[in-house]
Amino acid sequence: MAISIITEWLLALLIISGSFFGFTAALGLVRMPDIYMRMSTSGKGATLCCGLLLLGVAILFQDGRVTARAVAAILFLFLTVPVGAHMIARAAFRTHSPMWNGASMQSPKAEREKDD
Amino acid sequence: MRYTFCLFAVLAFIWLTNSGHYTPLILTFGLASILFVILIARRMKVVDQDSLPLQLWTTLPGYYIWLLRKIIASNLEVAACVWDGLFSGSFSQTKSASISPCSERIPTSLRSDLGKVLYANSITLTPGTVAIDIDSDSVLVHALTCNGLEELKQGEMEQRIFILTEKNTTSNLPAGQDKQC
Image (tube, rainbow over all chains, first blue to last red; front, side, top):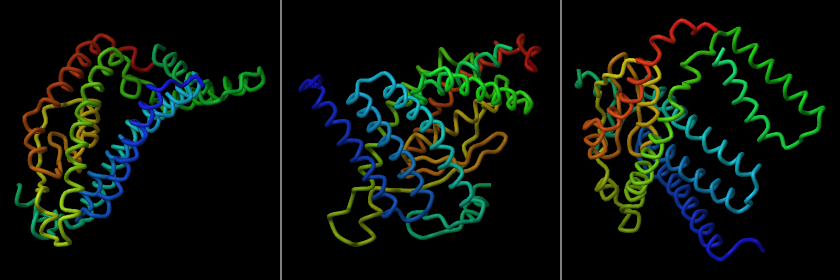
């Protein structure tokens, strides 16, 4: 096998931490009280999770084509995931989806008038 | 013309890395599809410095490395928020111990579309904060913890993007004429 012990451990670290962040994102999706916080936890957790897993895949195969694809996938994730999360949060804001302010659910419209 | 060539290079790179077949017939098909895409993009008049920010090639990687460090650091913070109180009991009050959600309009001095996109994207990528709405001069940000919002309001991220796009506008002023090409 071309894979040394160090690479193996690095690989395990990358994949396990990637899975941990993916699981945390899923857990946050269930536990958080409103949609804005759900977008906070899930969107970025998923970015880091997929980034680490793809990096692990690139190291595992050690093949130029696989590495190029993994890098391209990471780049596209970094460009598109925040846009998706932003659009969902924006749609929720526009339809006055209730926002949890620490004690109770409140419509963001009232929040906005208070700010202005 | 520069932008068309760069679009060609980017599309060819993506096609070559994703295809994996290098027989003459498939390569011809790839070339034909790339040219077709360029034709459509030029007809739509989207081939300019907004869609292909060439002048950022040298400075953007440095910014993303800085952002990556921030992403990892605050991802750990958010993970702590998510896991907090999971094993200590099923009361909903314990859940609210570590999170203090707040939302605020943060004024921004970034004027260019590219700068605003980068700023909003970076806010959303940094865990704990989501850019909800963008106006002409402010960004509505929702944060998981008030610390995150305070950190954002200190404006280090905005400053960095401002430096990136400030260079951008000054270098683009003389090159403004060949925008149509």
